[in-house]
Length: 419
Ligand code: GLU
Picture: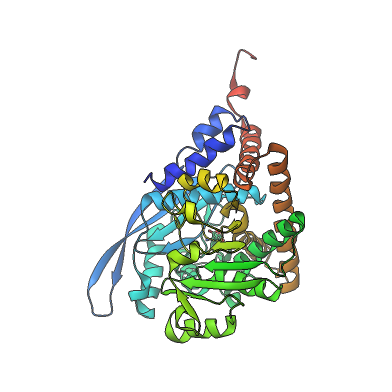
């Protein structure tokens, strides 16, 4: 299988067939701008000290300071963090946010840690990357297995190091520490706005439309709930412990409870199914909301959903693109569908800088209008170019990056032959 980053580059190649960009920006986007690798020391509760590999990558800062989350997961590695930072670059461009792309992570299984160990790890990570991040250079946020509490510890550690409260250095904080209303639900909310906007364009109704959500974390669970409330039939959800199915629609309250008490949605009443099976279910909408490479060359042919809404980053591997397209599966790409999180992170950063906080309704309205606008722009471009939504989104992102790079000066500007 090609590396994650090779797969990401393939999507740029696909977009380049429809848009010309300068060599300057093409070269610049072919690799990360700056990458930091650190060893994060953690003193475990039993007294043992262990070092864990940590990363922070600023992929591109043409559109503004790098922005992107921090992931705690055993599979975190340099290639993954760079690719995630690349996707952040594209995502911020599609949404028109004044940010470049960044990402960070630690290769560790946080589920094996006590709360005190998790706090020490979070603070130790900031000790290592404090000179690399900053409110005008690189602004972290939550990602897989990190949450407002972790962001709060991290901001507090940054305060200790700098002897100053710097709220705009990190987003997704607890509201009590300068977080924004609506940030926790933002990724699921944004994905739902994107779906709603497209459903209107497709002239389709939620009633009678079936949905399966693979991944019942923060974003997946919120998306499932919004779909159910809007009249879709959510027939299946899963998490790393397995999944649950009901053709008539699931009881999401009971499922959330099962996850809380027993650790997995599969403990709820109903027919169980595996994570592999949920991807192959015959449903109208499949929303992979967990990790990368859930749909690959191996199983793409068995996907029977009509639409895939990518709530996770990179759930569809690039080698699956052709098969899905040939089979008529429409893919709503991650760099649009899951951009609600970073959009409210942007709102949080703005509120921190102004020390002036918005009501929950204001955040929700502004998120919705940004998501609808970006989705319409992607859908329109897809129609004009007769391409899928992913390629259309990449074309839009590349255009914005190209325009910003030109504004700063490119080879054409520096040429002395006036050619
Ligand atoms: N981790 C989220 C993402 O992948 C949010 C990043 C942010 O808020 O900066 O989009």
